[in-house]
Length: 326
Image 1 (cartoon, rainbow, N blue to C red):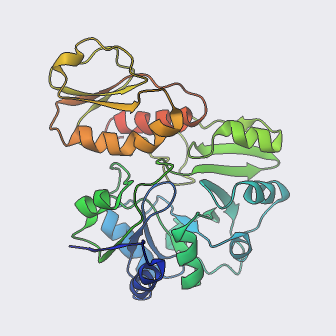
Image 2: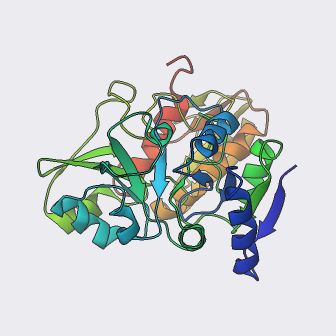
């Protein structure tokens, strides 16, 4: 099983242990503000191949490359003025920008799935400190088996990948709880490739530009992570917009709304009893995992508002509920 090293009380010990594993071209599970990531050297083919192997991830699905700061990011990708404005406003934080690779970039093509663009993010906290210490960007998809529920605690990672990796850094629960928002700037237009931890409304307020929403899940070309139609999926079938729950189903509800048949549910979990979308986002993946662990016949989810972080929550729920053969 994987070693688990907590960040507290000595972050230096965790950084030293992580850089030692990374230097061997092996992946390490690390906490970020969004979800736990499976991090490896983005410039090393063997390291990236081990990410794909560990996750069982399709290699046409690109990886986000995490940088220590904007200055590091500019060594690998070309920034237009609008992309730089967004980076200066929202980095470090849960925003990924898909940018043209520079000709001299040393990010390995395995990390970009052969595309001439790269998704770049600057994370907060421990992940940023680790990248500065390591000195190279880290490719870091979520630290879970491909297509399954993203992990928001070290325990989630250990339960899924503990037999396949050497090290998990434990930073406690992830405060945001859903992956980063992914944007691509084209000719002054802002395209949303994946909703996430930065609400679209915040992007529009910062730029004064209306954000173009993505096509329906699974209909667009893969330009960034999280665009597969079926993703973030538990083993149990997920049923959305539920107003009732059948015997044997687990119930995940939002805002403590009344639900017919709730007394016969296999489990009842509240994303946020008070209707707080930030709390709901932080609880989403953990509640899906808990519901799945009840051996319920299915998981019924009540409606979640589609504004602010609700857009990202609903995106993840739709992909979790999508047919598995898509």
